[in-house]
Amino acid sequence: MSALSFQNLDVWFGDGHDRVDAVRNASFEVAPGESFGLVGESGSGKSTILRALTGLAPHWSGEMRVEGRALGHRRDRAFYKKVQMVFQDPYASLHPRQSVDQVLSESLHLHGFRDIEPRIERLLDDVGLGPAFRFRFPHQLSGGQRQRVAIARALAPEPSILLLDEPTSALDVSVQAEILNLLTDLRTEHRLTFLMVSHDLAVVAHMCERIAVMQAGEIVEVMGVDEMRAMRPSHPYTRTLLEASLGYRRKPSPAGPG
Image 1 (spheres, helix red, strand yellow):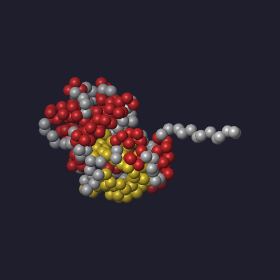
Image 2 (spheres, one colour; image 1 turned 90 degrees about the vertical axis):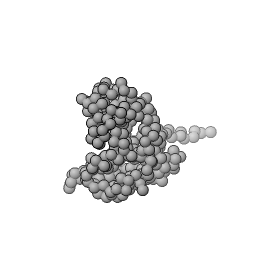
Image 3 (tube, one colour; image 1 turned 45 degrees about the horizontal axis):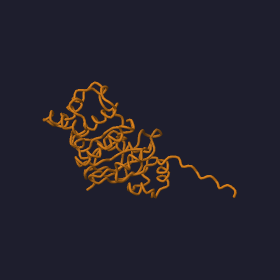
Image 4 (cartoon, helix red, strand yellow; image 1 turned 30 degrees about the vertical axis):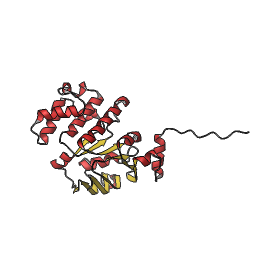
């Protein structure tokens, strides 16, 4: 049984003449414990798939399943105990007037936990923040520390699946590797399944076993990361994307006389 399954997924915004089809006929599966990447240019529909899954994009058709259970158009508490999301911008995803303690306490209470104190301590330890950070506010934290708090909040309900929407793109380059390594360790420790959105192929190569390449709302190819590293795509757009990620390639100069 797949951890996540998408079959013929269409997602759109607006109606009638104003309708925009953001995702068209997307089908793929994510195995339990796998880290699966969605890649493509901005506007290709990557994040829209995550939003449809979590109920943030309500207009969709097709089928989405979580651990074999088909989703309707409402998400219940059981869904959010299994599936949590880490957003792109740690500056926007935390309430500026809530301390770290309040952020984590609120999430734990919401999901019915009673042993709040030891759980907060464990969550902070899991993400590499000690007790000194517990009563700080977001403005007292660096970008990397804020993202660690956001990850701790996502871990609070003890989910089996984490959705990662460009989790390091808003961070300094020096901090990005720390957060990616933390996520890798947490995946092993908590036996998590990852569905990760990124435009950065180096990040995906570091984090994922397989990827789906999206162009203009459609999945044009699903491939293994080993194939990606070996530059063996089957679709022309994927090849263009891979070559662009390697940087500018200078054309060889025409041979001169003699």
